Amino acid sequence: MKKTLKIAGCVCLALLIVVLSYVVYVFLSYHRIEDNLSLSSDGSASASVRTGTPYSVVSYNIGFGAYESDYSFFMDGGTESWAWSEERLDANLESIAQILKQQKADFYFVQEVDTDSTRSYHRDESAVLRQTLTGYSSVWGQNYDSPFLFWPLTQPHGSSVSGLMTFSSAPIASSLRRSLPIEAGVMKLVDLDRCYTVSRVPMENGRELVLYAVHLSAYTSDGTIAVEQMKMLLSDMQSEYEKGNYCVCGGDFNKDLLGNSEEIFGVESGDYTWAQPLPDELFQGKNLTVAAPLDKENPVASCRNADAPYFEGQYVVTVDGFLVSSNVTVNSATVIDTGFAYSDHNPVTMTFVLQP
Image (cartoon, rainbow, N blue to C red; front, side, top):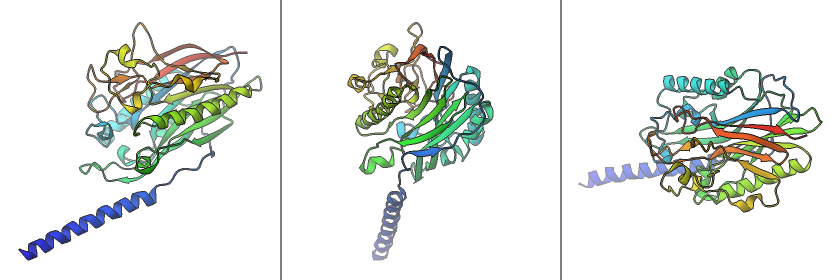
């Protein structure tokens, strides 16, 4: 009996040491990527940007290529941690790339683009997109660099390197990564390393079209950190507008951009921190507006909850869209309905004109 208890005690002690060692590893491995980091652009683009000309932009959170319609994610209350398989990941990425290409947009914003992650079999997804979207200048900015996550135990999520991409049919002169505020304490370990990127496109009139790619926080305690992130982003955009530049921002805001998505799409309230409306006071004194994608005759949401495979009646909301400065006229903003076949998000598109 004593021998059995001794063995059990040794096993428990060994497990405790392993757990404590892992906790120490996670905290020691944690770091934030430096702010105001210069990013390099890739590819060749030859178009010019001028006032009075209609342009189009598409934004798509591709869910690291894993979120097919039958996929659920463990951090959303689902079951899966990795893409189903390497073969299905590759096929899904190809479908995503073709959807983007078919839009023939002048600009693209793409979120959750992995470059070296366990969950996506260490595929460089930015390379896949660049191979398909030719004739564009492109920039990738990192917003996720996590230590190895040993959860779920049946399929540890592993380490992840992921980011945001911007594609421009006109040359990008320079690009910068800005670090957003994130939650403190333990929550910072699941809040990624949130950022937005700023890409400058020279215009024929001597001004600049400033492209902002963004993916705000989702896994937070109460949703207030995303508001702080918005304050920083809007302040930056307002400053550029006051210099005479044109600002277009696109991405996944993890906020209800319509303000009443539950009513529009007929779903019950989910009370999710990532689906709260944006406070109106954020825009007071700003020459900036939200361009929330919506076809009133045929309303389609941009995002589904990934707590289960997709089904009719699942919680949906529009968190993807655009922000523009007041010298940008928005002609249309809609959701491209893919039926959530390739991601837990649908792509969104906007047409706009830069005012003389």
